[in-house]
Length: 550
Length: 70
Image (cartoon, rainbow over all chains, first blue to last red; front, side):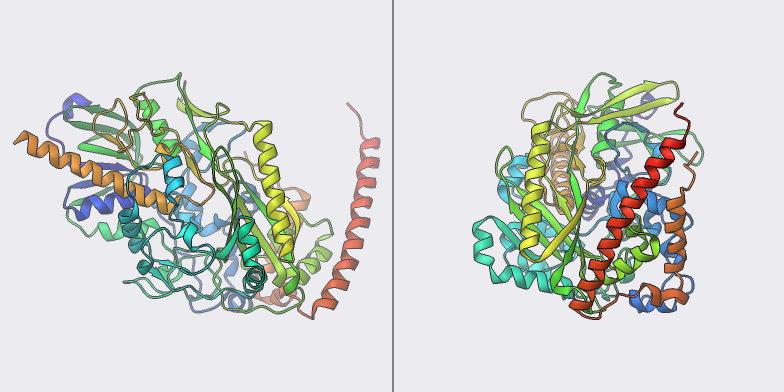
């Protein structure tokens, strides 16, 4: 097939995947005037959840007779069972993100249960919107040695970020131009009391390496273009009211109006065939079932760590090599904030993370453990009932008594390569399948347990008493990286520091596949910024080749 | 084939249907009658939870004993 196409490339740049990395890489290249094709499956939402955007969660609960259609969806059993797999963000309106996942991206594993997105916007469809512009030592551990400020600022301008620029967290998470950060939205009543307690002993906590502040969120507090400020209706898990919370599809939609951008959806990319003149991409058209091929001068892999790794192995027809995989272990803590017990809470609020805790922790070098603090309300009480050791009626009473004081903390731990965590391609009768393992050494488990205990003690010190910890299966954090890690040496299935895939001319890695370390801090803003950096590098290389060929 | 819905899941789903109907909104509102009321009520429910767990353990033990071990 490649032979038939090995003529003039149709596109300057082909990008696989429309998630945080693909969308931002595409933006960079389209604005530069290059002819760009974004190729993906790109399922879109069947229908927008229909609720009144002006009403708060509590008003909707009291008045909307159709609320079950978007709170429970067509298959409430799935919602209930998926909790351990993907956390609360994958609500019925966002399920399209993983449509046909098991058929499109087969993966076999007893110990690793990741989500792989087939939706427009990739895993960004259910992004919790927490933003972190990493510190230099973290970028260095990841393997990104280039200056990132310009790319962070470009990503932040596109995304629209709000938050504080003057609290204990700022130096640790806002390593970008503060001029691009909108003012913070108000905290809810629960978070306010926790922050006040922390601030009472802030210097002591900081000396112990514990920092608490308002989360930096990809959520607008002021209108930005056609997107609106968050209405604080506490419906952010259920829909994207006013588009205040950023989703990568907004960027793709903007690009679709540009004549030099082609969006090819319904294509499952199966292999890339690089040569000196460009790259041929083999795809299956999911509508017709036919094979198709596209040709471009450069290819950017942005299909996510699992699928970019899968593509690299499939393209080399390599069924032997095990690629490393990184995934943040993450735990959920249910806690009661005694300061709020029995007290009413403000109705107006947003639903996403209110506060962020960072706890310094040595782990093969300096790092942090992260806690994202949420006030539980709009995710409904029924989800919690099965974990309460009481009959349903009494269990419900228990939850109503705790409702305004109930606090959820999502703890994320860093991850680094280990021989126990890998993916491998297997050739089966019915096609290729990824196999994966995610083992944790006893020393790692013990380290995680120690850090978890530290976090629980810190919370208890704020009068936020932990009641239980849920430890989901590996893969539930939806943070994956590291399959094609950065390396200065020219080894197969590694990426050069400037983003080129070793041994594959004209192929670049624009997503988290290239990371050789995964910090606990959320990766999404850095994925966007790094994808822009890699796209800029590919554009520079294109320009240099054009000059050389004249 | 998906797993059948268990009895416990069915009970939770019945509550989910009720929780997403405006007719029963009041049954799911937070109870905010002050710290003391909440603390006393939670203590009583905590004692009930202990008794309930003990009762379920007893039921489980006896139901296992009565079943065919094969």
